Image 1 (cartoon, rainbow, N blue to C red):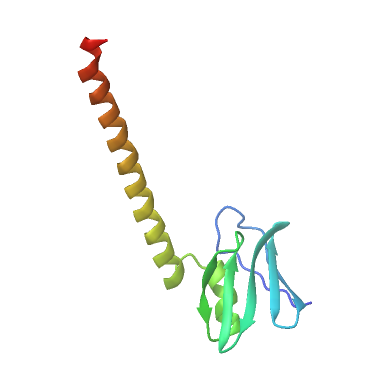
Image 2: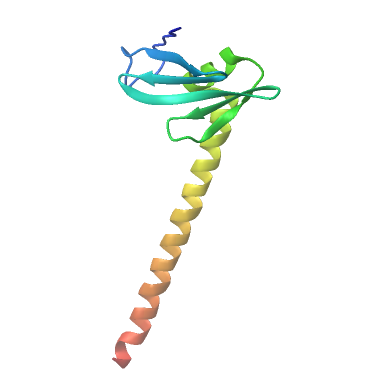
Length: 113
């Protein structure tokens, strides 16, 4: 089984990423004893998925797909992180606005209770 290692992620800096080809056109990675992601061969390229099964991106080469799991600086990863951060901010704003509206309503109705 081919193995590939990296030391680019800080939390498990000593852990190696180990790749195993488990089926024709399907590679699985684990790092530090935990599932790390997979790469699936599709028509015209390779699709990388993170440890949660979320597609990271589509790549022309197997090595590029594998590298995308290791690199937080990959353009696809950066774009996904940006979308996640914007969604988190929007959700937090909506929750805060709802809490404020309930507090104001409770304060306005308190004299009538």
